[in-house]
Image 1 (cartoon, rainbow, N blue to C red):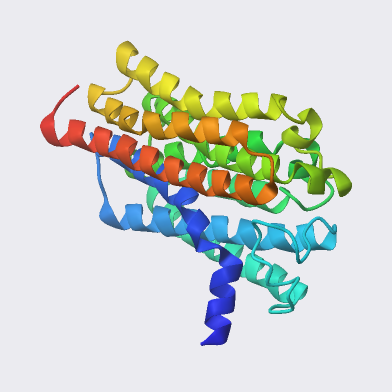
Image 2: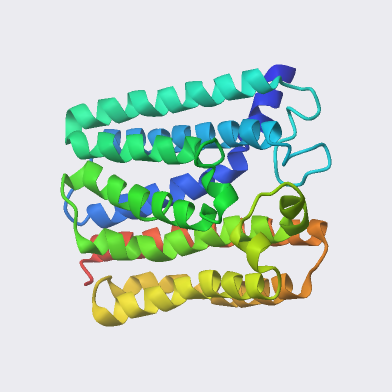
Length: 298
């Protein structure tokens, strides 16, 4: 099964929590009104399929542009080590996008065309994240793109799939999720500042340098908690969502650790811990909404 393991590495499934968590949050909010198990499963697989396509296509274009090499941290390395051809990785990304599109069409036939519109926009954003002529990640737009498409778009999309409506509650709840997934990308970009500068990949971190990039990481990470507190106080979310504050000590330690590190390998640990924080925070946020549904707490 060597080829299966190779494709497993290429897909980077450890990153899929970033596309799974927003679906859980959007569905948990919708459960106050509706819950359809089949639509939930379809939304989950559709989100992951588009994420998988984005991972593969981005690896291809980063390789073509020379940004990724054998020594690069954070990418799968299957092209650079000769495990898969660049053409195969691009084809794999195309197949994943096609699978996501097929799932989107299925959902749209059951829940309406807005799902298809969100899916098409997500595929285009995933493809042109690194592909020319837009190369969004190379123009300092990476954090904005992942905030929008792995925050509001997925959370509100998952909510719409269940209820066939758009409301403010899932939008507001998507903001802390978007902030933390943007923090994951930003941690990645802080680690890669020097490599990105050498290859003309001008992320916000590469443009600003440190310590300004550290301040952005603080704002993205701790900002998620500020939003949840405001949500609960304002009544736009039930108070059980404050369970996410259990992860605040982890976030504070993570911020301090990030600010104290300079080597790419040490900053790679920051990236992994930020992804873990996003997963735990998001799971608790979904749990908070679910508890409100189960208990009738407002």
